[in-house]
Image (cartoon, rainbow, N blue to C red; front, side):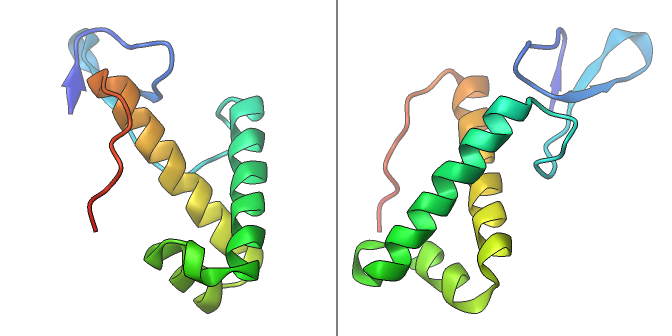
Length: 100
């Protein structure tokens, strides 16, 4: 995915001839510390709630919490949330609840 001008909330690589390529990757320490911390704390809270009542958690969330260590699961959840936020900001759309 290529954009002519970089948006302030996206991360990416400036290529030759002024083309800016958007690069989605892991949540790293190079990004905004505040947003990264909010995502991690929010997903840790969501994971604790999902552990207490797994019937209320989504299928993906319940599976990753059951299969992976707690910190790894919360990081994966935060990364998924970051991708969703990035997609909503890029496409200028509101959140749509996934149909199950």
